[in-house]
Image 1: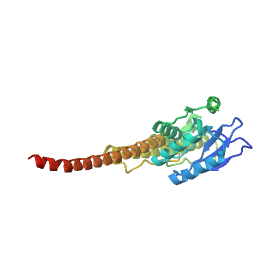
Image 2: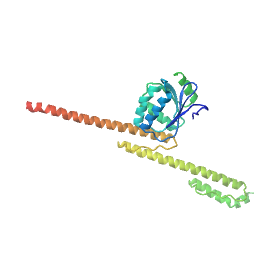
Image 3: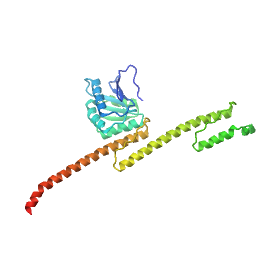
Image 4: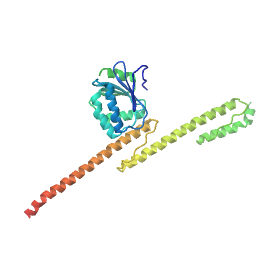
Length: 132
Length: 142
């Protein structure tokens, strides 16, 4: 699983912890939480936009090992919001559930930015760097 | 040496324990004597094995129950009843992956089912409107 580097300035949101690495990649580590409702996800997205501030779009490295199930309306909302802040997404998961949830989202909701699934974090970072 | 092992009362207990293991009975521990010899070491080892097998058995049973729940949800979906969802455990394993996939399929199908009903209602209304408009002309042409 991805580890938070010592000294990283993190922000804890319901469902995941975020930080920027030295390359400027936004890293996200999922936490085990009950399924988030749409209202909670809207708050999370608002907080995320606040965290990103003036930055336009970012490359994201998502560790979805412990991510929670989402319902249809949350998927719809996320699918509409993510393109506004995303350049590219690399996903890593060490659980079958996380892998399935990520594949479900990106299969059901076609996104305009590059998305790729990795089993190795280093490979994911190498791939993301070309989109920075 | 052979004679003393044969006479040892712990040997039949070990054999009985092995028989219980073969019948998936992991309820009884073997007692450890005060001799603390090789046979006691075997008993202690069998007790550890018992715990491992017992835990493994519980995990297997839990998996079986979760798979049975998936079957129940699939049967409901086959009847176009999408009201039930599969539970997702804390394990995050392949069964949970299947459950999450199944839940998403159920949600998508329920959504399509609602849209289909709406479309059918629209068509029914359009037909009724059309009939209402066409009828006066038909009356005139008679």
